Image (cartoon, rainbow, N blue to C red; front, side, top):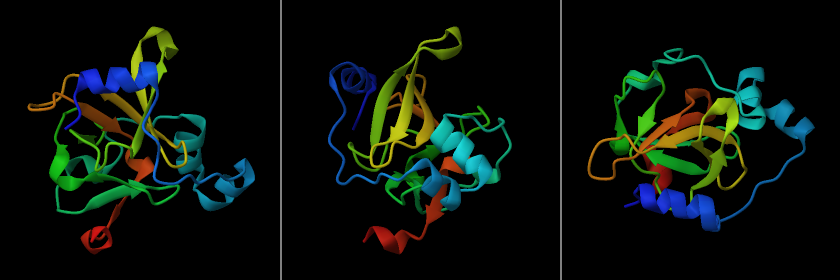
Amino acid sequence: MLNWNDIIRFVNKGNPDPDKRVEKTEEEWKAQLTPEEYHVTRQKGTERAFSSDMCSLFEPGIYSCVCCDTLLFDANEKFESGSGWPSFTQPLKENAIAYIADRSYGMVRVETVCNTCDAHLGHVFPDGPAPSGLRYCMNAVALKKVESEKTS
């Protein structure tokens, strides 16, 4: 189970290697994604808080990257944070997410990106529930729910 010290170590010393890499041109991403998906995932945008009903959906399943289908989060790790964005306590695998220091807007945060295709997903914070204390605050538009059978 990852904790905040692990996240800071990844930011400072490098992320785990992904299982695979997916690289496309900007034109290929634009053709594949909706304008909002492109803005959030490829241009590091943020959807409006409370703009998705994904925050209040807690059915079993797996969430993948909208860009490359990499499996990222299990719904069992999802919780209601009250932030207006879907929140999780752990990624599905340690190497599913990459972590980058984000010093934009006068803040110091940790950006989360898909480790397979570099899609911007959101940020991770050390204010989540026990036992990990992590809150992966994700843009719903960057995720898609997939059937549980795909993980077997």
